[in-house]
Structures are given as structure tokens and as C-alpha cells.
Amino acid sequence: MRRTLTAAGALLALALALSACSGDAPVEDAAGPATATVSTVDRTADVQAVAGEVVTKATETEPGRIEVETTIVDPRTDASAEAAQAVEVCNAVIELGAEHVSVLEADGSTFVVAGHPSYGEECTEV
Image 1 (cartoon, helix red, strand yellow):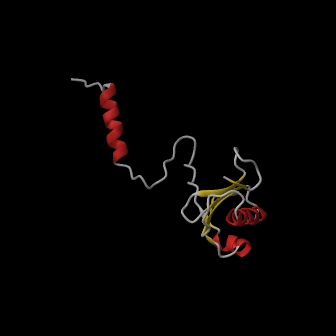
Image 2 (cartoon, one colour; image 1 turned 180 degrees about the horizontal axis):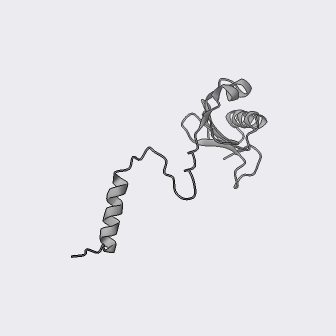
Image 3 (cartoon, one colour; image 1 turned 45 degrees about the vertical axis):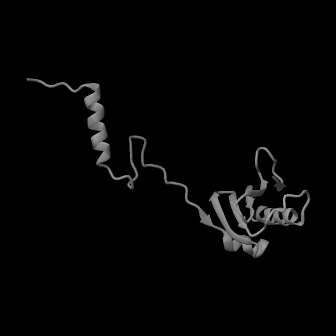
């Protein structure tokens, strides 16, 4: 007796085969090796050197894109001293060669951006 594999049976066999594979190993196919995942780079020391201790953490999430965490608290008023300070931090990061910058205030909210499609290339309070 000859058995034929139905589409549902083929899918089940494929699912079982895939479930046996480790999720940690990169998968290679006919196109070549799997691409490496993008890793973040700690840029805290570099950014603190140009922007000061107000910076608590700086991460390059991809080449040319840096996210900066700060101790700055936005008072939610226009043209505040805190906003000017956040813009200064942003400009300092631009001087390091970043094209896209996000400066976060102490609570993690985005305060100033540069290189954002909605706000332009210059450091701008959002």
C-alpha cells in the first residue's frame, strides 16, 4: 500500500521539523548565511564627554542613530532652559557624527530630535 502525503500532513511534518530546530542558531538557505542581527553600541562615555553628566546613557541603535537618556525634566513650557539644555545635548551628539538623535528626558519621553522626517535635520524640541 502506497501512502501519499496530504498538504496538511506536509505542513505538520514541516512544523515538527522546525520545532526541533534551535531558535538560537542562524538559519542558512540557498541565498547564503543569515544576516547578523543589529546590535546596539554603548556610547555613554563619548556623549558624556561632549554633553556632560546630564547624560545617563547613550546608545547607538544603528550606525548614525543615537538615543540619549538624560536627567533633564521638561517643565512643559515653551522655550524653557531645560529645552535649551536638551538642544545643546543634541547638537553635541550631532558633532560626534550622528545623523539621527533622540534626546529623552528623565521619564523616558522624547524631548528633542534631529534627523526626524517630521522635524527636519536640526535639533528640535518635540
